[in-house]
Amino acid sequence: MKSINPDNFRVTGKIELSKISTNLFNEASDDDKEKKLGKVQVKLSKLQDVMYAHNRYGVLICLQGMDTSGKDSLIREVFKEFNSRGVVVHSFKTPNSNELEHDYLWRHYLALPEKGKFAVFNRTHYENVLVTRVHPEYILNENLPGIEKVADITPEFWQNRMEQINNFERHISQNGTIVMKFYFHLSKEEQRKRLLRRLKEEDHNWKFSPGDLKERAYWDEYMKYYEEAINNTSTEIAPWYIIPSDDKEMARYIVAKIIWEEMQKHDDIKEPELDDKVKANIEDYKKQLEKE
Image 1 (cartoon, helix red, strand yellow):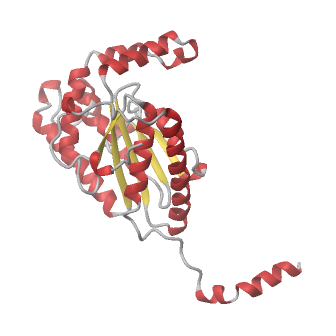
Image 2 (cartoon, helix red, strand yellow):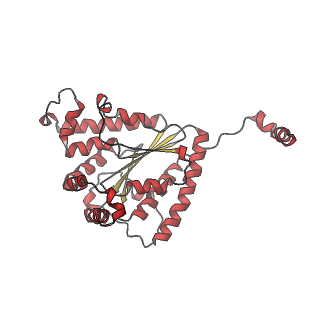
Image 3 (cartoon, one colour):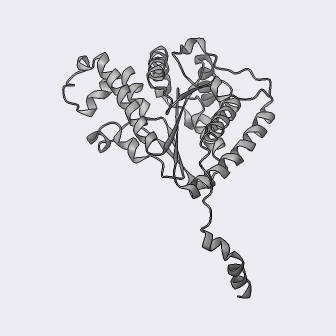
């Protein structure tokens, strides 16, 4: 299998999604990908243990992509070796009445990772510049000053909102949250196949919703707004990575490897050393316990 270089997936300039492949076309077998992923799973688990002891950083993993792009299964597979208390997954649905009484980032602040832990946002604060752009009428539910009707939502509104998101990510980064954002780049044809599979395989029927077909009809609009959001919000401290997602197994390995490689840049994450006095008396402590 070819080595995975995070820089090959990281967005550092303007991108056009239509020109980026949705499949890496790697020659590796599924077994090979699974073995490679397994090794990274264990490394990430050990890293999180060290992070917990170090207690300086939290890690925020943001996952965005069209329906069926593989976000749920990736979470299950990539983080399966973690201590269950070391990673918290948040799936953001339509804002409830309480959430709508606050600004749109409020609920995301509440879900940020504690120091020493990972948080995974399965769908993220970017829904506020994606779904709401495709369906701008949703913005009216936020009861914002000066927004009485859809016609009041100008291009400047969206530009301001993306800048607000950049400021949010800058703020949390400067306060110890490491941010990585992954866009699952799925082809429309592969989505069609996966939706059909949900309908044909009885044990997968529960995953299907007629709403999936409704949103599929807006595919081109979603691609346009994903592209715009990524181009406006991929920064040095909160980068986007575009993950070819037609091959689920490969996508999982790529994401896991990127997380591992990027975390290696934080070489200050180390287990704390014992106090000199405690260290000097370790043998005495052992003897005390052995005599019991």
